[in-house]
Each structure stands twice: as structure tokens, then as C-alpha cells.
Image (cartoon, rainbow, N blue to C red; front, side, top):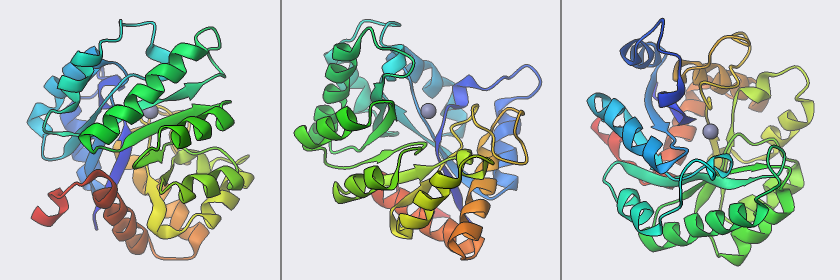
Length: 260
Ligand SMILES: [Zn+2]
């Protein structure tokens, strides 16, 4: 079996009691044979890449600036474009809009989001989108900028939003939230989204799935997300693994699975 964690932040785990090697080994032990480690600032991308170089066959990266990290560094379009062209960068992001935690820089969030989409079109790389309390603006900007391909990560929106994203050619990524007790309406969305448009993710170190809630999340636990999804969809775990891996390779133009 081959599972892929399509969204994690491997540089943000707590390494006081474990090493990155432990985390990568635990992933392998659970058939999680690849991870996309997602950057949240450009400097963060550079240090993350350095940290993960020994594991470069097991990881790919995204490069970009999270909407809640815009205060952390001055945006430099040239630097962004240079870094985004690096070899193991399969996506731009995570980008998007977050009006839940920050509303004093909405214009800047929208500008930087548009920059990611434009660069994605130029470099032919998909965008990884985060949205919170900003559903309509997110959809509007994706349409206005004629986004080419991407994924809405850690999906928590409604069926209507999922439908509009699917119409745009987007993939929908589900996290451990689908295992949470109060996530009944999200489970309805997961039933609705066709299997050939679904990705699975942990968003580690956040949002550990049941039965690991309260513990730090890690890529190995994407197995629980896939398992839960397989029960929801009434199909085998193997089928979910195969299909989500295929979807990942398609979206991110990732060919590593062929070398398995
Ligand atoms: Zn994330």
C-alpha cells in the first residue's frame, strides 16, 4: 500500500522527544511513503528544505507565504519566483485568505494570494489554498485569476463550496477533522466529493485524528484519515490509498511512485 500525506509542516513538529528520522520511519511503518511538506514563509521554506534534504526521496515541498504569516517577512516577488522554481517544489503555498484570525490586512492577503495564483500559472505549478471565514472572496479570486490547478486543503466548507471548487478543476483535501465527533456536515461533503478528486492530509503538527486527539499530529496518522474516509465511502482502505496517491501524482506532477 502507498499512502501520501498531501499536507504537513514537517519543520513545525516538536523535536524535543523525537527526531525527524523517527517521524519519517513511523510514516513508512504505516505505509505513508511520501509527504508534501508545506512552507508558510520563504525563509521557512529554505530552512525546511535544508532539514529535509536527507529525506528528499520521501518528501516534496511547497514554497509560499501563509496568509497569517504576512507580517513575518517583506514580500519579494523576485525571491519568491526564484525559490518556487527549485526542483523539489511541486506547489505554491500555502496561500489563501484567513479572515478568522486576521482582518487588519485583508487587502494584503488578497494581493499575495493573487501573486501565488499568477506565479502558479507562469510556472505551471498548482496552488495549495487555505481559507477561513473567507469563502466568497476565495472563490472570487480563484475565478478572477483563472487559477489553473490546485487544492483546497483541510476542507471545512459546505457542499456548495466544494461543488464550485470541483467545477474549477480543484482537488479537495480532507484532514483528521473528518474523524471529529462534531463534524457531521463535513462528513456529508466527504461523501459528496468524487473519489478521483480527493486528497488526504494530516496538516501536522495540528489536528491529530481520532484516536490520537490531543497528541501531536504526524504524517503516519494520515492512515487514520484514509481509514475513516474508506468507511464513509464504503470502499477498502487499499482503494482509498491507490486513488488518493494517483490524484496526488496527477495534481502535483509527481512521478516518484513509479520508482517504487
Ligand atoms: Zn497547513
